Amino acid sequence: MAYPQNENGRNPRGDGGPGARAERGPGGPETQAGPGSEAVTKAGPGPEAASAITSTPRAAAPASPHRPARRPVPRGRVARCAAPALGLVLAASLLGAANPAEAARPTGAPGASGAPGARGGEALDWQRCAIEGADPRQECATVRVPLDYARPNGRQIDIAVSRIRSEQPGDRRGALLLIPGGPGNSGLNGPSSKGQRLPSGVRGAYDLIGFDPRGVGSSTPVTCGLPHEQLATVNLRAWPDADGGLTGPVTRARTIAETCARDGGELARHISTRNEARDIDRIRRALGEDKLSAWGHSYGTYAGSVYARMFPDRTDRWVLDSNDDPNPRRVARQWQANYAVGVEDSFPAFAAWATDPANGPVVADRPEQVRPLFLRLAAELDRDPLPWPGANPDRLTGNHLRQVMLDSLGNPARFAFLAQVINAVRTGGALPAPGTQPSDAFLRNNIAVAVATICNDVSWPRSLPTYERNMARDRARHPLTAGMPASVMPCAFWPYAPREPATRITDHGPANVLLVQNLRDVSTPHSGALRLRSAFGDRARMVSVDATGHGAYMAVDGNACGDRLVTDFLVAGRRPAHDVTCADAANIPSNRRAG
Image (cartoon, helix red, strand yellow):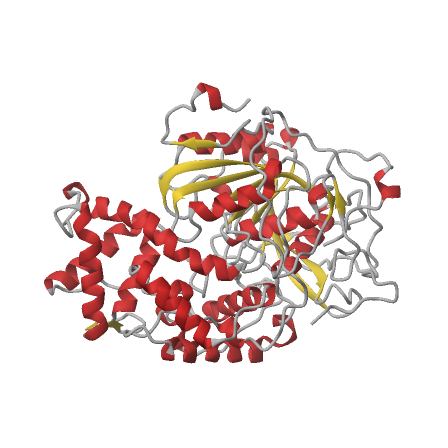
């Protein structure tokens, strides 16, 4: 379904909405490649020397006749904090370019967040955040954006935003947007949570900005009224039947699609990554900033990449952490498929950990014994599940064990839990107490946004025989994931076609992108990050970190080399001259040191 256009074939507001003329940045016009287009450019790293990245603010765009609403997040409404990505492909996430006449006008440096800026944004009405556990310095406000950017004068929806001001106003460079993962995760409390893990130099250089993407939490929300039992993570993922069949996943996928489409209403039809990018640019404009810097995580790397493609001249220093594969023909289909690779990459790290007596009771004597043990136990549970009181569902099936593995490989702190479950099954001992699941209301919101995003971004196959063939092949190649990465998803039954083509990431734009990526990441494997790196070409450099887990920059266990490179980029604008691999906390080799 195409977006409507006005009589001259353009978006009437220049919002970068569907039907807008191609945006033109330093590398040329934006293309809107469809699902059948080629995936990524193959340009590789160039010989660029490291240099300080400076901001050259663009001139003002016309002020919007629809000013951002000056309303705080309601005090009686507690925002949902980000939780582990529990949806379907979860790991765990705008205005056109200024016209030539405006670009010719001189402008000043980026303004303070919330001050009227060169682009005509009006100061937001910042108020105390009604979020439990928020830093007392954190403020919240609301930006109004069009439900449908093709109809900018139509219905408006709320985007909840937050900030903690720069801790060193004299050193302030601009605003650092924390782009949450998911899709479907909240980012409103980001400045208080992940933002406080940032080094003091970063917290001094930027106002930290968080937000709930459209449909999420304290923004205008959507929901998907699934029953409690359906909200179990093992039931949300596309795990096949015990015999490898599709009956169960087809039934679950159809129910999820029908329920989320029905309960999500019109808003669910307008939740997409490109619309999130447009919303981000409305946030930028409301903040009064000529440009934004960003730290995007997981799905936030894809949303950040799409923004950097649609609005290249509005990016300052752009950090993408734990990177999604940008394949424009597949998008989230590729992310789901990559779980097979991510598990194969990450499982050996668990096997080594779980056979080291220093970490507690071992599951086997040698690392090479752990994989066949796991496969045997999962097959036994497929045939004869064990009761697991307090869990949802309250039986440990083979797929439930596989889901525990998937959740644990993304965070080495959970290796011990996975080992306890394996040992309990192996020895007949008591299973450990299951973890606490987020509230049903949170999950219904999270799932509604996740489904709408991945189904609206790109078309998915609807042929069940295709899924059967692909799943059987994947199940044979990657037995640890039993075919789930190729199984049927709700998008096979989503009633709406994408309203516009997926975005093809290219090298058009300023060289101001830094990717940081663990070598072993179950959700966003290193191979997918390399494809994003290739797509960006000379716009990007990549820091690969020899670590396991989902999240590389300022991770709990940390990597001094990777953290130092990213921090130096954010604070001083120095980017590595070439792609770098950080083996550990040791110094960077002299021939690869940032300039």
